[in-house]
Image (cartoon, rainbow, N blue to C red; front, side, top):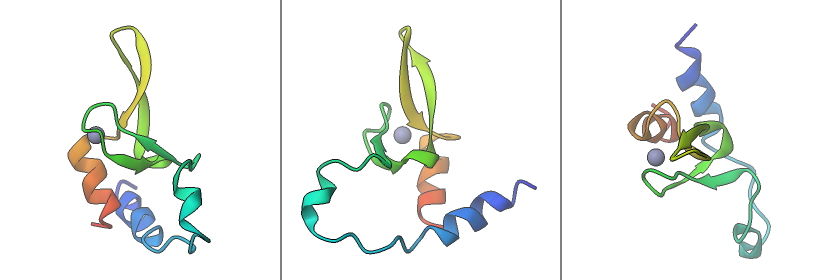
Length: 72
Ligand SMILES: [Zn+2]
């Protein structure tokens, strides 16, 4: 069911409050997309080989991840 993707994103719209801003420095669940440079939740990214190196990029695409991040 492809429609589960947006439903999944909707459920993630309100993450549990993070105690203190210090934890924003390194969050293992957040990674930066190598293509658009935006910080995404790990499950909005997939690994892709760029120039022979495994990097994390938005999945299915930068635009797609943006929509999923917005819960649409
Ligand atoms: Zn991206």
